[in-house]
Image (cartoon, rainbow, N blue to C red):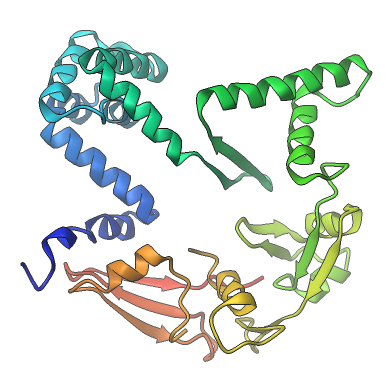
Length: 327
C-alpha cells in the first residue's frame, strides 16, 4: 500500500482535485477524469482529432459515452471506424448516431445489457436558468419519457381546442407542475418565507434588494414579493438571524445537533452539497479522510467575515471555500 492507503482507495481523490481546480462539482470532475482516461487509453484517434481542433469536446464526449460498454480493443476498433466515417464533418447529433451505430455493431449483447443496467440510474434534477427560471429534467427510460410527453401533448390539444388563451408551451409547462404537485394552478406553490430576504425588501415595494431561494440563488425582491402575494398555496414564515454585518448565524428553532432545521440552516448559509458543521456530502467527507487532505477553518462566520475553510489537497494545492453573503 502507498502512503497507508488501501489499494482499492488509491486515486479516489483525483476527481475531487480536478473538481476543485476547475471549479466544478465532484460528479463533473469524475466525468472529466473518466473521459480523459478513455480518450488516452482507448480512443487515441478521437483524442488526436480533439487536440487538433477537428472535433468539439462535446463530440468527443459522445464517442466516449456511446462506447463505454466496450472493452479496450473493441473501443479502439470503433475509434478507427468513426474517424474513417468522417465524424469530424458531422454535427453533434449525427456524430452521436455514428458512434452509437458502430458501438452497437461491435458488441450488440453488451449494448443491450448496458441499456438495461442504465435504467437503474433514472433520476430527476433541477438546475438554475437565466431570468429567474429553472430547468427540471427527468432521466427516464425512453418509453416512459415518450409516454410523459405524449400525455402532456394530448392534454394540450384538448385545452387549445377548448379555447385556452395560453401558448402550447405554457399549457404543457403548467400541466406538468399541476400534475406533479396536485395543485389546481401551477402558480399556487406553497411558500416558506425564510428571511434571508431583508425584512425591508419584503415589506417595502420600492426596495430593489434581492432575496435568495435555497437551491436556486438570488431573485429580485419584487418577484419574490409577487410570489408571496399571488400564490394561493400555503405560506409559512421562519425567522433567520444575522450578525451585525449580515452573516447568517442562527435560525428558529435552535437545536444542538446538525440535523433537522439546523442542518437546513447550514445549507442555507453555504448554499451547497462550522467548526464542525460544514455543508458537504458523504463523498466529500470520505475523500477528505484520505491521507494528504486537510481542511482548516479560517473564519468561523462569527467574526464579521463569511464562514471560510481552507482545503489543502495531496498535491499541495489550496482552495478557499466561503459561504455566500446573504442579501
